[in-house]
Image (tube, rainbow, N blue to C red; front, side, top):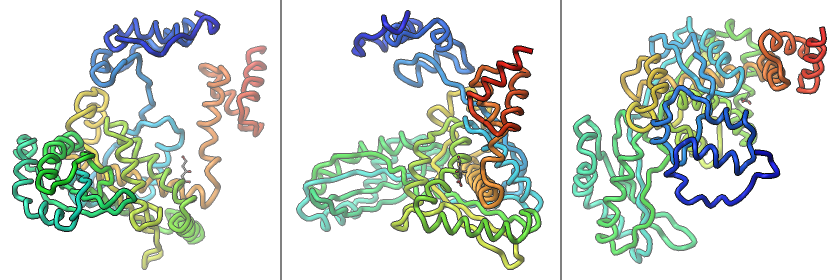
Length: 427
Ligand code: MEV
């Protein structure tokens, strides 16, 4: 099929009922894909097509992301190997290097605020919102019963309804009565449980208050599921006072300027999201929670802090919401996620979250140290140049030769890589 013959309607009735092969054929003919592109879509992966079909609608293929292992991490006195799924070079090496530099001072110490999630129910059209708020709060025991009846298994495992909050939110379309049901979801991320509870409860809330129930959904600002990690790097391990002080100045830049904070926190999320993805957890939930939390003071700030200790060493801390689970969803059914989780030997979702927070802090240390000293490009260069060599068509031994030459020539781009490759092949 050539590009000219491609096209047609995106309206494809019954597409979801077709076989994977039929779907690929149709997509290939729609887009005018060549045989190589079609074969790439049809290539097998380490997830069974039947399982993938259960995970998403209209499944056609998978996209593999490399997984590497971050070494050298010591979290709460235990050495752990951490799988990280990322397409970005230098991320995994940065965690390993940073963790090595604080391994001998004890590594990372973590804590959590618990595993409680919040679900929100929005009530509109209430003339007396302050009275409505109290009417709801008075029914806490009844609400607990309604919520717990939705998930007896969670209750048996020690989780379930914990508490209630009712907030009045003034908006241009009136004061809304927002009920928060707070539920301990233990080893589950908990979205399904709390969403079910919110949906079940909403008609009662509307009846009790005379309002209209609208949205019923969890909040990704999971600020009752905060995870904290801290670590200390000796001044000597960092490379002296000058580097230490430069890193502290880099932190204050991020904490006081949202333009820098966005990039600083993106670096943290390079580590966090890579572990979240490797374990089959919801990267978007964790990311939106982290960024919303970074703005909880009313200004978008750094998720980490950096300061000099009385001994002149560098102490880093991080605090962020981490709604991750060990049960439910892709975590439970994706065989690769399960195998990768097994590497970390965690028994609870809390333990997993603690490791993720430590990875976020290590990642941040690595990025800040590089930025405050030689810059980020030097460390990136080698893998980046290899990617460029690949993109230019290099294969096997050619990749190392081409990437080395373009680094030497300081021309790390595809055109230069193509030239070097052509010369190499001529010989
Ligand atoms: C790149 O993916 C991440 C960094 O930009 C983080 C940072 O600037 O702190 C290096």
